[in-house]
Image 1 (cartoon, rainbow over the protein chains, first blue to last red):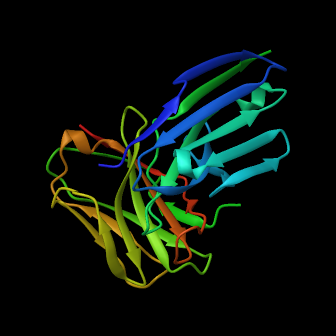
Image 2 (image 1 turned 45 degrees about the horizontal axis):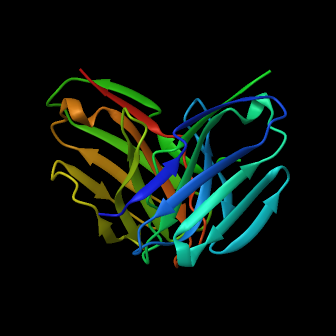
Length: 108
Length: 113
């Protein structure tokens, strides 16, 4: 089956600190989409990033497709960043295969 | 802004009953999906439909049956629910083709007692 591994599983930060989230995936998958899942459960797309580096505000996503990995960097974390971050590489049918997520808690 | 609408948001039922979840998207997409998020929060693909045609079926028990009347609707019926069906079911849609972003609904939580 498809394999997607995220690390760390959980992370606790003090407000203002930076976070680096990692995602590794198996060879049959490609490109990458990063999501944020609110504590209530709804999913918000953060990035579609098939390769290279993309920026959005305090977020940066870097995907190195040859090495089957992607990262999400959060700078100057805020308490509102708390939630679960999910990476999801996709198959050739545009189906996403999700990692188990990184649960981020940002304390004031 | 939500453009993938799921109903009901929450449903409690007994083992053996039938349940249906509805999903509608207003984005003009032609591909729709059902995902299941279990108690460990792991999201797994169940089905993918493109223009009412089944594209992906990821080893889902036969009591689950998707139903698509048109490309904007993809419903999920579960015959004779079992306790392990308790989960959040998430509907999503996208344009056809690799690389198109998926947009998710708010989810439908099923509790089987």
